[in-house]
Image (cartoon, rainbow, N blue to C red):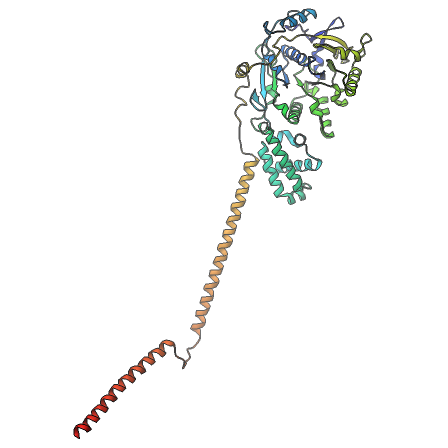
Length: 520
């Protein structure tokens, strides 16, 4: 092999006068890379990524500081530490050492420094979401009810907006859901809604959606048969450590659930490097820790090796640490009682070497040195050795933006994930249902008003007909009473008659008197 590896092993370095190798057939038995900041963990990881790739084994590695991105470009003689790298290669017998690049695919949850990685709310599931939102037991129970209710209603939970809409619907139907699924308190629903808003403010909404990640894209090889190194840009993601840890746990769970059983293959199908692994276990509830232990224990049968990278080995729970057969321990510093405890614990995990005081050596290791113990062909750990770690062939240090963009443009996953898909899901369905409910209620109210008005109209018409019928059915009776009009007519008639009578009388009187006087 070009990196001086044997056919069945990966060259790590020189220790105890012998070359130290990682057995490929035992790489799926997981591993631990520990050490204080600045002791050489990143260089060890970069060298392992190169070697796995050279053997046709794809790798997934979380790049917390941005340094691992250099694996995509060859080293350079102009590098300031070039002479030291060449000297180290010569010192440990690294034959044929030469600079070389590796096939790389860049990923980024936020889509800024690589292809965006997305999953759906449904695929994440209530357990990991509950961990991500730090829910209480009661709130976790309500969240699980919401998922069950969504399944029963055929509602797709794809994005955070879908989950928020679902919780609104759960609150509105809390009484009915309590009778069907169990207790649903509006207080718990309100708490979950606030947690969802917090996730959104942390940028988690970028992670939920479609197209969802196809796990098979982590298993690609190039035209030379080299495995792709999948580098996750995690520098920004580390600002939300719980999201970072939950995402990587979800990724391991997806690998575990989707991959077929392969037993113990000659070499792993994928090697997974989990940097800042202590974040996975901080404040983790018991049920989640048990799930992590189960995944780590069983995923090796799927051909996946998991290497935890952490500063302090005691950050890994014993039930998980006991499954990490391959170990590279860089220097630890004994500044505090906790540090001293970590040194003792790390020393006790190695197979004893009578020629080496492990506890003392851990504090004396220089940058680029480590205590190494790998599983042999029988699966037993080798005697611990103090070893000089090999130098990487790729660049030490991050890529610049232009180099990253060029590599991403020729990625086999180019354009597959860059455009987001928005299909009908729970939010749209529930909104449509709400509109239909409002429209139906308004139509019912309008119908009720119309029926009420029609009833009142019918009642008034019936009353009028009844009145008319009574009038038609009753005989007319004479009456001495006069209407105002009749009285006025009669009065006018009497006045006219009286006036005419007086005029006639006057004429008669004048005629009579005239006759009498004339005759006189």
